Image (cartoon, rainbow, N blue to C red; front, side, top):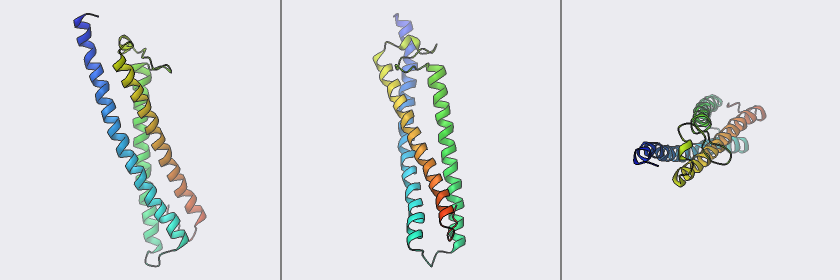
Length: 157
């Protein structure tokens, strides 16, 4: 590999490093958001179903449910959008195969670089982790819908 070729590859490696770093941050934030949604949902679905609070009116609960589901749907939609964009990048631009070797025109000449293999493996793992968070959020939305059907005294969602 010539010095000129090597220099042209470095920005792509750097770009992958930045992408991994950003996705790690996004994953950490989305994981915390998912935990907060779960805690909020548990507060209303479990606590209110077992021991309704007389100080909380039906309208307040209904409003909370509408806001909860609306915000949760927005988070799920944004995560889904991010996952679609990441899939497009990995499939079309990188051409990442099941073997973890890039075949896309911008990355195929980096396939022997151990740093690139490591970064692409990290990207694939982050993609899986983000998908897991999104699936958990979708389960929470479904649990909210189930609670609404089961607890007709407190139709919150």
